[in-house]
Amino acid sequence: MGLSCKESNDKRGPVFAGHGSVNTSKSTVVPEGTSITFFSKDGAVITDDLGVAIENWEALNDSYHRTFEAGESIPLYCLYPTCGALNIQPTSTQVNRATTIDELLKPDMGNCRWAACTFDEDHENADLIFHTDGVYKKINGEFFVEVDGKWIKA
Image (cartoon, rainbow, N blue to C red):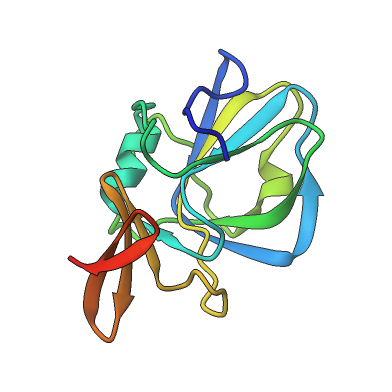
């Protein structure tokens, strides 16, 4: 995880948008000339507001993010078609069937972004919600915000 949102190169690649999940028991390798940035921890969800900010290439310097560089092994993420409930930008790459990240990433794509959840209901992060203004957690129907590593009722 970097401290700034400056991604690995200046070439903007596609933004993959829709619904998403992760299978941490499988992996793939980021191709040469390509990197990809995620804005949530594995297993978690993102809000539509964060998704739109990612798609619009907003500077999300204070948001959680992790960039995987060419040659790095990454979990097997999957992108799904949107159900119409998301505010997907017309410039984003969408899919019409479940598509794994190894099918999406190709060599020399530049810096790609993932504007989708990485949800896994069995993951320890399944109750985390990543938003433009921070990370939230839903506990017994109530929302908490992470402040300095502690959960405080929102």
